[in-house]
Length: 237
Image 1 (tube, rainbow, N blue to C red):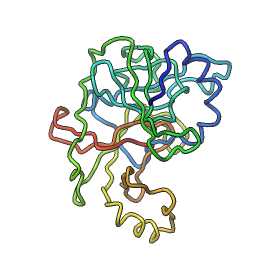
Image 2 (image 1 turned 180 degrees about the vertical axis):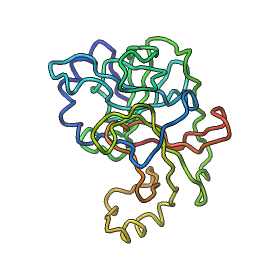
Image 3 (image 1 turned 135 degrees about the horizontal axis):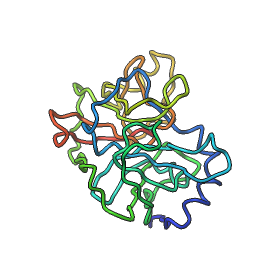
Image 4 (image 1 turned 120 degrees about the vertical axis):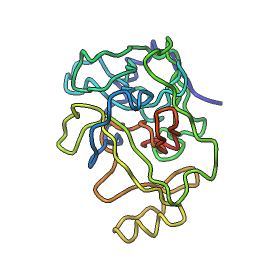
Protein backbone atom coordinates (compact mmCIF):
# COMPACT_ATOMS: atom_id res chain seq x y z
CA UNK A 1 0.00 0.00 0.00
CA UNK A 2 1.07 3.62 -0.41
CA UNK A 3 0.19 6.84 1.34
CA UNK A 4 -1.19 9.86 -0.45
CA UNK A 5 -2.71 13.22 0.37
CA UNK A 6 -4.66 15.82 -1.52
CA UNK A 7 -3.57 19.43 -1.96
CA UNK A 8 -6.21 20.57 0.53
CA UNK A 9 -4.20 19.07 3.40
CA UNK A 10 -0.81 20.36 2.27
CA UNK A 11 -0.86 23.71 4.10
CA UNK A 12 -1.82 22.40 7.55
CA UNK A 13 0.56 19.46 7.40
CA UNK A 14 3.34 21.79 6.28
CA UNK A 15 3.06 23.76 9.52
CA UNK A 16 2.98 20.69 11.78
CA UNK A 17 5.78 18.72 10.11
CA UNK A 18 8.24 21.42 9.23
CA UNK A 19 10.19 21.71 12.49
CA UNK A 20 10.91 18.00 12.92
CA UNK A 21 12.15 17.71 9.33
CA UNK A 22 14.12 20.94 9.06
CA UNK A 23 17.41 19.52 10.32
CA UNK A 24 17.28 16.73 7.72
CA UNK A 25 17.21 18.98 4.66
CA UNK A 26 20.35 19.35 2.58
CA UNK A 27 22.12 21.84 0.15
CA UNK A 28 24.91 22.25 -2.48
CA UNK A 29 28.33 23.67 -1.61
CA UNK A 30 31.49 23.72 -3.65
CA UNK A 31 29.34 24.17 -6.75
CA UNK A 32 28.86 26.66 -9.55
CA UNK A 33 26.03 28.39 -11.37
CA UNK A 34 24.17 26.31 -13.93
CA UNK A 35 23.28 27.53 -17.38
CA UNK A 36 19.62 28.59 -17.35
CA UNK A 37 17.31 25.96 -18.89
CA UNK A 38 20.16 23.43 -19.23
CA UNK A 39 18.42 21.35 -16.56
CA UNK A 40 14.80 22.44 -17.02
CA UNK A 41 13.62 19.21 -15.39
CA UNK A 42 15.46 20.20 -12.20
CA UNK A 43 14.15 23.77 -12.06
CA UNK A 44 11.66 22.59 -9.46
CA UNK A 45 11.06 24.32 -6.15
CA UNK A 46 8.70 23.01 -3.47
CA UNK A 47 7.56 26.21 -1.78
CA UNK A 48 5.93 27.09 1.52
CA UNK A 49 3.98 30.33 0.96
CA UNK A 50 1.74 30.38 4.05
CA UNK A 51 2.61 30.70 7.73
CA UNK A 52 3.31 33.14 10.55
CA UNK A 53 7.09 32.74 10.54
CA UNK A 54 8.25 34.70 7.49
CA UNK A 55 11.81 33.38 7.80
CA UNK A 56 10.59 29.83 7.22
CA UNK A 57 8.66 30.62 4.04
CA UNK A 58 10.00 30.01 0.55
CA UNK A 59 12.03 27.19 -0.96
CA UNK A 60 11.88 23.95 1.04
CA UNK A 61 12.99 21.11 -1.25
CA UNK A 62 14.02 20.42 -4.81
CA UNK A 63 12.72 17.81 -7.20
CA UNK A 64 12.76 16.66 -10.79
CA UNK A 65 10.07 16.64 -13.45
CA UNK A 66 9.69 13.00 -14.56
CA UNK A 67 6.48 13.50 -16.58
CA UNK A 68 4.65 16.69 -17.61
CA UNK A 69 2.45 16.35 -14.52
CA UNK A 70 4.69 14.39 -12.11
CA UNK A 71 7.55 15.50 -9.83
CA UNK A 72 9.98 13.16 -8.08
CA UNK A 73 11.30 14.34 -4.71
CA UNK A 74 12.33 13.11 -1.26
CA UNK A 75 9.75 11.44 0.95
CA UNK A 76 10.61 13.56 3.99
CA UNK A 77 9.62 16.70 2.04
CA UNK A 78 5.96 15.71 2.39
CA UNK A 79 4.06 18.29 4.45
CA UNK A 80 6.69 21.01 4.06
CA UNK A 81 5.21 22.78 1.04
CA UNK A 82 1.93 23.98 -0.43
CA UNK A 83 3.08 24.99 -3.93
CA UNK A 84 5.28 23.50 -6.62
CA UNK A 85 7.10 25.91 -8.93
CA UNK A 86 8.38 24.61 -12.28
CA UNK A 87 10.86 26.69 -14.27
CA UNK A 88 12.38 28.32 -11.19
CA UNK A 89 15.99 29.43 -11.72
CA UNK A 90 16.62 32.31 -9.30
CA UNK A 91 15.36 31.17 -5.86
CA UNK A 92 15.90 34.58 -4.25
CA UNK A 93 13.64 36.25 -6.81
CA UNK A 94 9.97 35.81 -5.90
CA UNK A 95 8.90 37.14 -9.30
CA UNK A 96 11.06 34.66 -11.24
CA UNK A 97 9.03 33.50 -14.24
CA UNK A 98 7.75 30.04 -13.44
CA UNK A 99 4.65 27.87 -13.43
CA UNK A 100 2.90 27.42 -10.10
CA UNK A 101 1.02 24.23 -9.30
CA UNK A 102 -0.69 22.65 -6.36
CA UNK A 103 -0.35 19.02 -5.36
CA UNK A 104 -3.23 16.87 -6.62
CA UNK A 105 -1.91 13.93 -4.63
CA UNK A 106 1.38 12.57 -3.27
CA UNK A 107 2.67 9.00 -3.13
CA UNK A 108 5.54 8.04 -0.87
CA UNK A 109 7.46 4.82 -1.28
CA UNK A 110 5.39 2.15 0.50
CA UNK A 111 8.36 1.19 2.72
CA UNK A 112 9.07 4.74 3.83
CA UNK A 113 8.93 5.26 7.61
CA UNK A 114 8.51 8.74 9.12
CA UNK A 115 11.19 8.30 11.78
CA UNK A 116 13.77 6.84 9.38
CA UNK A 117 14.74 9.44 6.78
CA UNK A 118 17.42 7.31 5.23
CA UNK A 119 15.65 4.40 3.55
CA UNK A 120 13.09 4.60 0.74
CA UNK A 121 13.07 8.38 1.03
CA UNK A 122 11.20 8.86 -2.26
CA UNK A 123 7.92 10.53 -3.20
CA UNK A 124 5.99 11.28 -6.38
CA UNK A 125 3.85 14.41 -6.61
CA UNK A 126 0.98 14.50 -9.08
CA UNK A 127 0.58 18.12 -10.13
CA UNK A 128 -2.84 19.72 -10.50
CA UNK A 129 -1.84 20.74 -14.03
CA UNK A 130 0.66 20.04 -16.79
CA UNK A 131 4.02 21.76 -17.13
CA UNK A 132 5.03 23.37 -20.40
CA UNK A 133 8.32 24.82 -19.12
CA UNK A 134 10.17 21.66 -18.10
CA UNK A 135 11.43 18.73 -20.18
CA UNK A 136 10.95 15.51 -18.15
CA UNK A 137 14.20 13.74 -17.29
CA UNK A 138 14.91 10.13 -18.18
CA UNK A 139 15.00 7.79 -15.17
CA UNK A 140 17.71 5.15 -15.03
CA UNK A 141 16.51 1.57 -15.53
CA UNK A 142 19.92 -0.10 -15.94
CA UNK A 143 21.25 -1.76 -12.77
CA UNK A 144 24.82 -1.52 -14.11
CA UNK A 145 24.59 2.28 -14.22
CA UNK A 146 26.32 4.21 -12.73
CA UNK A 147 29.68 2.44 -12.77
CA UNK A 148 32.92 3.06 -10.87
CA UNK A 149 34.35 5.41 -13.47
CA UNK A 150 31.29 7.68 -13.63
CA UNK A 151 31.31 11.29 -12.49
CA UNK A 152 27.81 12.35 -11.48
CA UNK A 153 26.21 15.79 -11.22
CA UNK A 154 24.07 17.13 -8.37
CA UNK A 155 21.74 20.02 -9.19
CA UNK A 156 19.84 22.18 -6.72
CA UNK A 157 18.95 25.60 -5.37
CA UNK A 158 19.21 25.07 -1.62
CA UNK A 159 21.06 27.38 0.75
CA UNK A 160 24.80 27.76 0.36
CA UNK A 161 27.43 27.40 3.09
CA UNK A 162 26.83 31.03 4.12
CA UNK A 163 23.20 30.21 4.94
CA UNK A 164 21.80 32.23 2.04
CA UNK A 165 19.90 31.04 -1.00
CA UNK A 166 22.03 31.21 -4.16
CA UNK A 167 21.35 33.79 -6.85
CA UNK A 168 20.66 30.96 -9.29
CA UNK A 169 20.51 27.19 -9.52
CA UNK A 170 23.78 25.45 -8.65
CA UNK A 171 25.48 22.25 -9.77
CA UNK A 172 28.51 20.29 -8.64
CA UNK A 173 30.22 17.09 -9.71
CA UNK A 174 30.70 14.09 -7.42
CA UNK A 175 32.34 10.72 -7.94
CA UNK A 176 30.27 7.54 -7.86
CA UNK A 177 31.60 5.02 -5.33
CA UNK A 178 30.36 1.43 -5.24
CA UNK A 179 28.67 0.60 -1.94
CA UNK A 180 31.21 -2.17 -1.34
CA UNK A 181 33.97 0.45 -1.29
CA UNK A 182 32.05 3.32 0.27
CA UNK A 183 32.43 2.31 3.92
CA UNK A 184 36.18 1.94 3.47
CA UNK A 185 36.45 5.39 1.90
CA UNK A 186 34.31 6.84 4.70
CA UNK A 187 36.51 5.23 7.36
CA UNK A 188 39.57 6.82 5.78
CA UNK A 189 37.92 10.22 6.27
CA UNK A 190 36.76 9.55 9.83
CA UNK A 191 33.13 8.82 8.93
CA UNK A 192 31.00 5.84 9.94
CA UNK A 193 28.41 4.56 7.46
CA UNK A 194 27.92 1.06 8.80
CA UNK A 195 24.37 1.66 10.05
CA UNK A 196 23.32 3.96 7.19
CA UNK A 197 24.41 2.43 3.90
CA UNK A 198 21.74 0.05 2.62
CA UNK A 199 21.42 -1.84 -0.71
CA UNK A 200 18.80 0.66 -1.90
CA UNK A 201 21.18 3.58 -1.36
CA UNK A 202 23.94 5.04 -3.50
CA UNK A 203 27.29 6.46 -2.45
CA UNK A 204 28.78 9.49 -4.22
CA UNK A 205 30.91 12.42 -3.17
CA UNK A 206 34.02 14.53 -3.57
CA UNK A 207 36.11 16.49 -1.09
CA UNK A 208 34.73 20.02 -0.72
CA UNK A 209 31.63 19.30 -2.79
CA UNK A 210 28.25 18.10 -1.61
CA UNK A 211 24.55 18.77 -1.30
CA UNK A 212 23.20 20.98 1.49
CA UNK A 213 20.16 22.55 3.21
CA UNK A 214 17.22 22.86 0.80
CA UNK A 215 18.54 20.45 -1.85
CA UNK A 216 16.63 17.42 -0.57
CA UNK A 217 14.78 15.80 -3.47
CA UNK A 218 17.07 17.36 -6.08
CA UNK A 219 18.34 15.01 -8.80
CA UNK A 220 21.65 13.19 -9.03
CA UNK A 221 22.30 12.65 -12.72
CA UNK A 222 24.63 11.06 -15.22
CA UNK A 223 25.12 14.07 -17.46
CA UNK A 224 24.84 13.75 -21.22
CA UNK A 225 25.90 16.13 -23.96
CA UNK A 226 22.47 17.75 -23.98
CA UNK A 227 19.57 17.94 -21.54
CA UNK A 228 17.66 15.19 -23.31
CA UNK A 229 20.67 12.89 -22.89
CA UNK A 230 20.79 13.20 -19.08
CA UNK A 231 19.78 10.25 -16.91
CA UNK A 232 18.66 10.59 -13.30
CA UNK A 233 20.30 7.87 -11.20
CA UNK A 234 19.43 9.10 -7.71
CA UNK A 235 18.43 12.07 -5.59
CA UNK A 236 19.62 14.10 -2.64
CA UNK A 237 18.31 12.73 0.63
